[in-house]
Image (cartoon, rainbow, N blue to C red; front, side, top):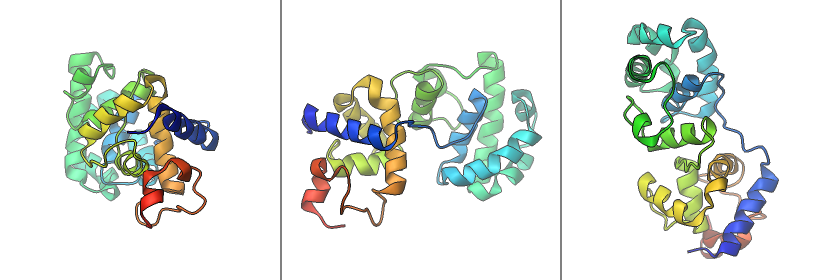
Length: 213
């Protein structure tokens, strides 16, 4: 397990690289973020951001999503992949939000994960970005990089990674840290060819000291 000093250095270095720590998904309404995260499964955020403007123009309200034909929603999100399942989840989720939560995105893990297509990753993102609560968003970037750094034991299980990160990351840093993991994963610590030479986290990276990627 990393020392507190090493964890602090990693956090501060990432802050310097990505001070804004913004979510990559573009949205205006809370439920739009919820739907965008569903679309991002097995799809890039860049592709989702290309698709959602037309989707939200066609269905401008939560009520319009709830009344939509999933087949038509699927036409707008076709390029995101797995569009049939995603479209069905979005329509059902809109209905649940209206029927059970007064049209608002709920603010607890239990309520969020009761919604169609919403797992812990999505729920954590909503809790962090919408409700400003401590949140540990364990997407592929976060899982890969925290394993390489030695912040986790290298598990690919999002639930295990989340549990391990809760043990080492200060809650107030958690949400922004996970956003920075995404940005760092795209720029430096990529899946196939990480730029280990000159990496700003090399000093505290367990993998850089042991492996050559």
